[in-house]
Length: 150
Image 1: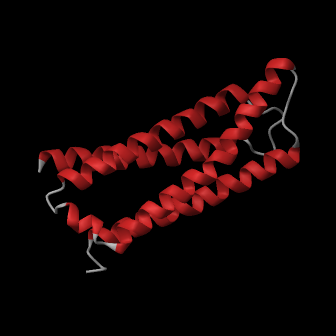
Image 2 (image 1 turned 120 degrees about the vertical axis):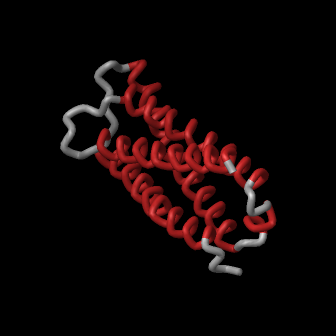
């Protein structure tokens, strides 16, 4: 029971940390900014990705060592919906990451480089899509935890 409690707490903290990192990216790309802090944006995205990996590892541990048993998760369609949404959000997150890396590379060659408005808008759209996934995840988790599909 203690292991389950620790893993659940760590899982939730990773989720919240990822939500914060996503919100920070959104704020760092605000149209009202006169300059985008590219290094901070890159570090924030790296935290986002690192927390995603940790969340996945902890989630796997929760499935394996849960008092409910792995079958509770593996046979639950809400669990698989959660996994699908998480993977979709991860796939969408590749677009901002690729742009951040490209922008950082360009700024190394030109210290005054700033991304163009339309490029920023496209990345913000991808962040908005990710946020929609983040809204769905706790709803799916609550449905799964209560065995609504049973």
